[in-house]
Image (tube, rainbow, N blue to C red; front, side, top):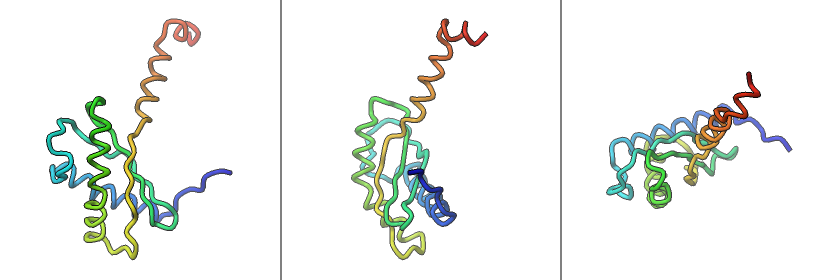
Length: 124
């Protein structure tokens, strides 16, 4: 079964949540990330159709610290949820779950395959 496109409301809520979380991460106001020397970037946010669940994908500049950053963000999920509740007028504030964004790794993998001499020869 094909996945349905998100509604405009889902997209607006996701964008607002992304702004709020990114703002706190950029300012260094997430205590669970203190001491982790890496840059964290929120790449995508999706919200369930009933607006009760939210998934936040991120990348970190240091791949060795991904699990540590994931743990810190997941511990801070209730903090982010309270901030979303305070800064929006949503009836229900979604439960926030963090995931590592692997799409950039896939792009690198494809790029390396295209640069391989055998593949480059076939492309000519």
